[in-house]
Length: 141
Length: 71
Image (cartoon, rainbow over all chains, first blue to last red; front, side):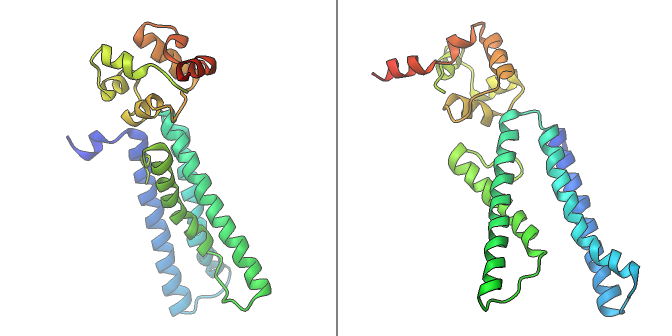
């Protein structure tokens, strides 16, 4: 049986959406690197292009919302919510702690795009937390 | 929440996957319910009751029943 046939439709849609979001993210990042960094593009278009890789993170959050809405298995829905809460807790705590460290201590500045990146890594930790406490990683580990 | 799912399943010689297919959920869901790690929603509990031809309270144990069983 092929992968597409074995995979539930909602999971398949999730994978396709993630792939599209990644293409938009990498494409906009690549374009910003070449046009702004290398060729010195300026003006409102440069601002829009510079914001585009960051805006593609909005797609990631939307994709997770759709996954929770479309998932028919209520147990997996709960696992996804737990996973997202773990990731959100880790990323926001890390951002808050580092923010205060930067305020009071001589630590290096961390660019803000690392916090949603940490959120994405946090999803993996959330899946491990699910495995330990609920016996399964879920389906989007 | 404790339940009699494993016994009821064994009586019918169903695997967790067999029951999962009948419920239209994952095998992991059946395992989580069976081991008491996850309490199903009311619609899913009714579906379970329908599949086994029993009342919900014949499948899931009330807290007092759990305590009595432990004593």
